[in-house]
Amino acid sequence: MVSAPAAEASLGYRDGFSLHLAANAVVPLLKAKFYRPYAGMGAALYMERWLSGLDLGLHLLLGAERDLGRRGTAFVEYGAVDFFDQHRLLVGYRLAF
Image (cartoon, rainbow, N blue to C red; front, side, top):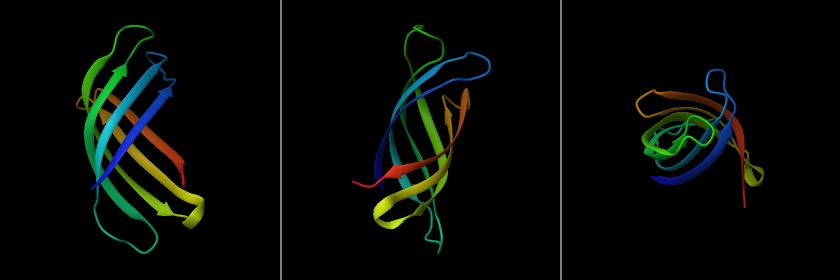
């Protein structure tokens, strides 16, 4: 199990703005040759509308990552906040330090 803190700001269609802070516990699901699927859950503080106040919700995530060695990790991840109240599809790169 890995602790995975996350912070993001996003622009969306309906509400226009979202701020999301989460602390997740992530568990690898299996070891594949080219990618590693994982699932996780944690607490999330999120703001649905600009300066509307922070709400606390459950953050669920499911994703897959590919290790790029010393350069970092590429990933695709689906996340849902507060039992599918907000949906996120993330494609990104985690830097290796």
